[in-house]
Length: 320
Image (cartoon, rainbow, N blue to C red; front, side):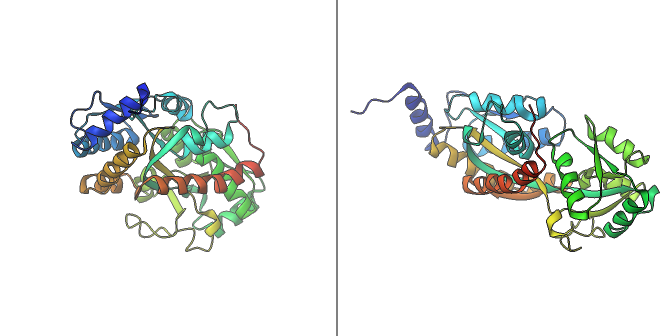
């Protein structure tokens, strides 16, 4: 009879429970969310945990581990035992950008097993209404008239919003300077009041202010328009496909988590994301379903290496 290691016994026992299905798990599955409680990601995580619990018959517990651009939570999962009892609700920032930007980071792409791709969302190219810019062509003309670097709010060095400014600057051949903020609300105030010229915030953060006439969303960084904002064109539609960009959210497990467990979690996550209640939450928060299994997430990570990796390399960006 073949001997099993201690971890092998744990994994084997959990896999046996998959056939029941997972109804007598030895302990709950902890879903690490590398963001603070109360925000959109926390809401998504709790609905995901509820759906996966119902589908697998195992308690899923959400644990918020915010801080350091998602590094604290991601590091905890990367170091966790590969027994299927801990997952990371990761994304562009906590996983791809941190790894690409920080050579001293304590985790790499191969520190995780890809479990499931879940959803993504667009950025915007937005200006305060006070500057009288109504199109990307107007923005270029405004920048040339001002004869200075236009400022944009970012969520800190290496964030999606920070890097997107580099993409826009190169594509439109206009000088831009990032102004870092700790939160979206403070950045929004400075956009509305005209202290900054640009923002790449999500549509959901800006929709009410656009309706009130305080800001003008020039474009979404997508291929197509958002039904919630039918009057806002996409960058592809406007002839700027090189300005496409998004941020995504997915599930990761510690490297070495048994393949059967990974697939079981992937199936449960996909079904949950495709449920009516989850889809409604996506719409409410301006996100798009992109549910898929391990291969879909692997493809996204490869795309990030090419897309964001090129931006980071071309601009010689390295963070501690």
